[in-house]
Length: 253
Ligand code: C5P
Image (cartoon, rainbow, N blue to C red; front, side, top):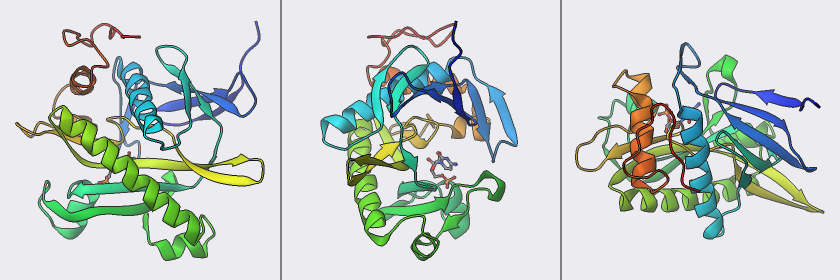
Protein backbone atom coordinates (compact mmCIF):
# COMPACT_ATOMS: atom_id res chain seq x y z
CA UNK A 1 0.00 0.00 0.00
CA UNK A 2 1.45 3.37 -0.99
CA UNK A 3 1.65 6.06 1.64
CA UNK A 4 0.45 9.50 0.53
CA UNK A 5 2.75 12.44 0.91
CA UNK A 6 2.11 14.92 3.69
CA UNK A 7 2.60 18.45 2.38
CA UNK A 8 1.78 20.54 5.46
CA UNK A 9 0.30 20.08 8.91
CA UNK A 10 -1.36 23.07 10.57
CA UNK A 11 -3.30 23.50 13.82
CA UNK A 12 -6.68 22.38 12.46
CA UNK A 13 -5.92 20.82 9.07
CA UNK A 14 -3.47 18.61 7.21
CA UNK A 15 -2.65 18.89 3.52
CA UNK A 16 -1.67 15.80 1.53
CA UNK A 17 -0.56 15.54 -2.06
CA UNK A 18 -3.66 15.29 -4.25
CA UNK A 19 -4.73 12.59 -6.62
CA UNK A 20 -4.27 14.80 -9.70
CA UNK A 21 -1.51 17.31 -10.49
CA UNK A 22 -2.19 20.75 -9.05
CA UNK A 23 -4.48 19.39 -6.33
CA UNK A 24 -4.21 18.71 -2.61
CA UNK A 25 -6.28 16.73 -0.15
CA UNK A 26 -7.34 18.89 2.80
CA UNK A 27 -8.01 16.87 5.97
CA UNK A 28 -9.98 18.52 8.81
CA UNK A 29 -8.75 17.57 12.29
CA UNK A 30 -10.77 17.65 15.53
CA UNK A 31 -8.14 19.85 17.20
CA UNK A 32 -9.33 23.21 18.48
CA UNK A 33 -6.74 25.85 19.32
CA UNK A 34 -7.00 29.44 20.45
CA UNK A 35 -4.69 32.25 21.54
CA UNK A 36 -1.99 31.12 19.14
CA UNK A 37 -2.31 27.47 20.29
CA UNK A 38 -1.84 28.27 24.00
CA UNK A 39 -5.31 26.74 24.55
CA UNK A 40 -5.82 23.33 22.93
CA UNK A 41 -8.47 20.62 23.00
CA UNK A 42 -9.81 17.81 20.86
CA UNK A 43 -13.48 18.41 20.01
CA UNK A 44 -15.09 15.19 18.76
CA UNK A 45 -16.70 15.71 15.38
CA UNK A 46 -15.43 19.28 14.76
CA UNK A 47 -13.40 18.24 11.72
CA UNK A 48 -16.40 16.49 10.17
CA UNK A 49 -18.61 19.55 10.68
CA UNK A 50 -16.04 22.01 9.33
CA UNK A 51 -15.34 19.85 6.26
CA UNK A 52 -19.05 19.84 5.47
CA UNK A 53 -19.65 23.52 6.31
CA UNK A 54 -16.63 24.72 4.33
CA UNK A 55 -17.89 22.67 1.37
CA UNK A 56 -21.32 24.29 1.74
CA UNK A 57 -19.95 27.87 1.78
CA UNK A 58 -17.37 27.32 -0.97
CA UNK A 59 -19.96 25.71 -3.26
CA UNK A 60 -22.35 28.58 -2.61
CA UNK A 61 -19.62 31.07 -3.49
CA UNK A 62 -18.84 29.20 -6.72
CA UNK A 63 -22.54 29.39 -7.64
CA UNK A 64 -22.43 33.21 -7.47
CA UNK A 65 -19.17 33.34 -9.43
CA UNK A 66 -16.65 33.75 -6.62
CA UNK A 67 -13.68 31.47 -7.38
CA UNK A 68 -12.50 29.15 -4.60
CA UNK A 69 -10.01 26.32 -4.19
CA UNK A 70 -12.74 23.74 -3.48
CA UNK A 71 -13.09 20.92 -6.03
CA UNK A 72 -15.11 18.22 -4.25
CA UNK A 73 -15.60 16.55 -0.92
CA UNK A 74 -13.92 13.16 -0.75
CA UNK A 75 -15.23 11.79 2.53
CA UNK A 76 -16.27 12.82 6.07
CA UNK A 77 -13.04 14.63 6.82
CA UNK A 78 -11.39 15.31 3.48
CA UNK A 79 -11.89 17.48 0.45
CA UNK A 80 -9.98 17.80 -2.81
CA UNK A 81 -8.77 21.36 -3.38
CA UNK A 82 -6.75 23.25 -5.96
CA UNK A 83 -3.17 23.83 -4.97
CA UNK A 84 -2.56 27.57 -4.63
CA UNK A 85 0.27 29.85 -3.74
CA UNK A 86 -1.03 31.23 -0.46
CA UNK A 87 -0.69 34.97 0.08
CA UNK A 88 0.70 35.26 3.64
CA UNK A 89 -2.21 37.35 4.89
CA UNK A 90 -5.31 36.74 6.96
CA UNK A 91 -8.00 38.81 5.32
CA UNK A 92 -10.54 39.82 7.95
CA UNK A 93 -13.92 41.41 7.25
CA UNK A 94 -15.86 42.95 10.12
CA UNK A 95 -19.51 44.04 10.19
CA UNK A 96 -19.78 44.52 13.96
CA UNK A 97 -17.03 45.23 16.50
CA UNK A 98 -15.74 42.13 18.31
CA UNK A 99 -12.54 40.33 19.23
CA UNK A 100 -9.28 42.17 18.71
CA UNK A 101 -10.98 45.21 17.14
CA UNK A 102 -13.29 45.71 20.12
CA UNK A 103 -10.32 45.33 22.47
CA UNK A 104 -7.98 47.59 20.50
CA UNK A 105 -10.49 50.41 20.23
CA UNK A 106 -12.31 49.91 23.54
CA UNK A 107 -15.59 49.25 21.73
CA UNK A 108 -18.47 47.19 23.05
CA UNK A 109 -18.75 43.82 21.27
CA UNK A 110 -21.64 43.84 18.83
CA UNK A 111 -21.47 47.57 17.99
CA UNK A 112 -22.45 47.92 14.31
CA UNK A 113 -19.69 49.36 12.11
CA UNK A 114 -20.48 52.20 9.68
CA UNK A 115 -19.56 49.87 6.80
CA UNK A 116 -17.82 46.51 6.41
CA UNK A 117 -14.15 46.96 7.30
CA UNK A 118 -11.44 44.83 5.69
CA UNK A 119 -8.16 44.43 7.54
CA UNK A 120 -5.04 42.32 7.11
CA UNK A 121 -2.85 40.33 9.48
CA UNK A 122 0.52 38.94 8.49
CA UNK A 123 0.36 35.13 8.74
CA UNK A 124 3.13 34.24 11.16
CA UNK A 125 2.35 32.20 14.27
CA UNK A 126 5.64 33.11 15.95
CA UNK A 127 4.60 36.79 15.80
CA UNK A 128 0.95 36.11 16.67
CA UNK A 129 -0.34 37.15 13.21
CA UNK A 130 0.14 40.93 13.65
CA UNK A 131 -2.24 43.43 12.07
CA UNK A 132 -0.46 45.11 9.15
CA UNK A 133 -1.29 48.20 7.09
CA UNK A 134 -1.56 47.96 3.30
CA UNK A 135 1.64 49.98 3.06
CA UNK A 136 3.62 47.08 4.62
CA UNK A 137 2.00 44.53 2.32
CA UNK A 138 3.06 46.40 -0.78
CA UNK A 139 6.49 47.47 0.51
CA UNK A 140 7.41 43.92 1.56
CA UNK A 141 6.05 42.49 -1.69
CA UNK A 142 3.47 40.13 -0.13
CA UNK A 143 0.94 41.46 -2.65
CA UNK A 144 0.77 44.29 -5.19
CA UNK A 145 -1.64 47.21 -5.06
CA UNK A 146 -3.68 45.53 -7.81
CA UNK A 147 -3.75 42.27 -5.84
CA UNK A 148 -4.93 44.15 -2.75
CA UNK A 149 -7.73 45.85 -4.66
CA UNK A 150 -8.80 42.43 -5.99
CA UNK A 151 -8.52 40.80 -2.54
CA UNK A 152 -10.70 43.51 -0.96
CA UNK A 153 -13.30 43.12 -3.72
CA UNK A 154 -13.24 39.32 -3.25
CA UNK A 155 -13.53 39.62 0.54
CA UNK A 156 -16.51 41.98 0.27
CA UNK A 157 -18.29 39.60 -2.11
CA UNK A 158 -17.69 36.77 0.35
CA UNK A 159 -19.06 39.04 3.10
CA UNK A 160 -22.25 39.81 1.16
CA UNK A 161 -22.82 36.14 0.43
CA UNK A 162 -22.05 34.90 3.94
CA UNK A 163 -24.03 37.68 5.68
CA UNK A 164 -27.05 36.93 3.46
CA UNK A 165 -26.94 33.17 3.94
CA UNK A 166 -26.52 33.56 7.68
CA UNK A 167 -29.28 36.15 7.99
CA UNK A 168 -31.59 33.68 6.25
CA UNK A 169 -31.13 31.23 9.13
CA UNK A 170 -31.34 33.77 11.94
CA UNK A 171 -27.61 34.28 12.43
CA UNK A 172 -25.68 37.56 12.45
CA UNK A 173 -22.29 37.49 10.71
CA UNK A 174 -20.12 39.56 13.04
CA UNK A 175 -16.81 39.00 11.25
CA UNK A 176 -14.75 36.35 9.49
CA UNK A 177 -11.36 35.56 8.08
CA UNK A 178 -10.43 34.19 4.69
CA UNK A 179 -7.16 33.33 3.04
CA UNK A 180 -6.50 34.02 -0.60
CA UNK A 181 -4.24 32.12 -2.99
CA UNK A 182 -2.84 32.63 -6.45
CA UNK A 183 -3.47 30.16 -9.26
CA UNK A 184 -2.02 30.30 -12.71
CA UNK A 185 -4.06 29.54 -15.82
CA UNK A 186 -1.31 29.57 -18.44
CA UNK A 187 0.06 33.14 -18.28
CA UNK A 188 -2.83 34.52 -16.25
CA UNK A 189 -2.80 34.77 -12.48
CA UNK A 190 -6.08 34.68 -10.59
CA UNK A 191 -6.81 35.18 -6.91
CA UNK A 192 -9.14 32.64 -5.34
CA UNK A 193 -10.57 31.96 -1.89
CA UNK A 194 -8.54 29.23 -0.17
CA UNK A 195 -8.16 27.54 3.26
CA UNK A 196 -11.61 27.13 4.85
CA UNK A 197 -14.75 29.00 5.75
CA UNK A 198 -16.27 27.55 8.89
CA UNK A 199 -17.37 28.56 12.40
CA UNK A 200 -13.65 28.28 13.29
CA UNK A 201 -12.95 31.34 11.16
CA UNK A 202 -16.19 33.37 11.60
CA UNK A 203 -18.04 35.00 14.44
CA UNK A 204 -21.69 33.97 14.30
CA UNK A 205 -24.34 35.17 16.77
CA UNK A 206 -27.93 34.01 16.97
CA UNK A 207 -30.01 37.07 16.02
CA UNK A 208 -32.71 36.45 18.65
CA UNK A 209 -30.72 35.42 21.70
CA UNK A 210 -27.21 36.67 20.90
CA UNK A 211 -25.91 33.12 21.57
CA UNK A 212 -22.43 32.65 20.12
CA UNK A 213 -22.23 29.81 17.59
CA UNK A 214 -18.52 29.99 16.67
CA UNK A 215 -15.04 29.39 18.05
CA UNK A 216 -15.54 32.02 20.76
CA UNK A 217 -17.53 29.26 22.55
CA UNK A 218 -14.18 27.49 22.94
CA UNK A 219 -12.04 30.63 23.41
CA UNK A 220 -14.33 31.92 26.19
CA UNK A 221 -15.47 28.56 27.70
CA UNK A 222 -19.12 29.21 26.86
CA UNK A 223 -20.20 25.56 26.46
CA UNK A 224 -19.97 22.72 23.96
CA UNK A 225 -18.29 23.83 20.73
CA UNK A 226 -19.55 20.89 18.66
CA UNK A 227 -23.14 21.66 19.79
CA UNK A 228 -22.75 25.23 18.52
CA UNK A 229 -21.34 24.11 15.15
CA UNK A 230 -24.03 21.43 14.87
CA UNK A 231 -26.67 24.14 15.37
CA UNK A 232 -25.18 26.15 12.48
CA UNK A 233 -25.06 23.05 10.26
CA UNK A 234 -28.67 22.11 11.10
CA UNK A 235 -30.00 25.59 10.35
CA UNK A 236 -28.22 25.61 7.00
CA UNK A 237 -29.67 22.20 6.12
CA UNK A 238 -26.23 20.62 6.07
CA UNK A 239 -27.33 18.22 8.83
CA UNK A 240 -30.87 16.94 9.38
CA UNK A 241 -32.69 19.08 11.95
CA UNK A 242 -32.92 16.20 14.47
CA UNK A 243 -29.17 15.45 14.35
CA UNK A 244 -27.00 15.46 17.45
CA UNK A 245 -23.25 15.62 17.10
CA UNK A 246 -22.55 12.63 19.34
CA UNK A 247 -21.20 10.16 18.58
CA UNK A 248 -20.99 11.04 14.88
CA UNK A 249 -22.88 13.60 12.82
CA UNK A 250 -25.18 12.14 10.18
CA UNK A 251 -24.41 13.65 6.82
CA UNK A 252 -26.81 14.38 4.00
CA UNK A 253 -25.20 13.73 0.65
O1 C5P B 1 -9.46 37.84 16.80
P1 C5P B 1 -10.03 38.78 15.77
O2 C5P B 1 -11.11 39.63 16.30
O3 C5P B 1 -8.96 39.58 15.08
O4 C5P B 1 -10.67 37.82 14.66
C1 C5P B 1 -11.44 38.32 13.58
C2 C5P B 1 -12.05 37.13 12.84
O5 C5P B 1 -11.04 36.38 12.19
C3 C5P B 1 -12.78 36.15 13.76
O6 C5P B 1 -13.92 35.64 13.07
C4 C5P B 1 -11.78 35.04 13.98
O7 C5P B 1 -12.40 33.80 14.22
C5 C5P B 1 -11.03 35.04 12.65
N1 C5P B 1 -9.64 34.63 12.82
C6 C5P B 1 -9.21 33.41 12.32
N2 C5P B 1 -7.92 33.01 12.45
C7 C5P B 1 -7.03 33.79 13.07
C8 C5P B 1 -7.42 35.04 13.59
C9 C5P B 1 -8.75 35.44 13.45
O8 C5P B 1 -10.02 32.67 11.73
N3 C5P B 1 -5.76 33.38 13.18
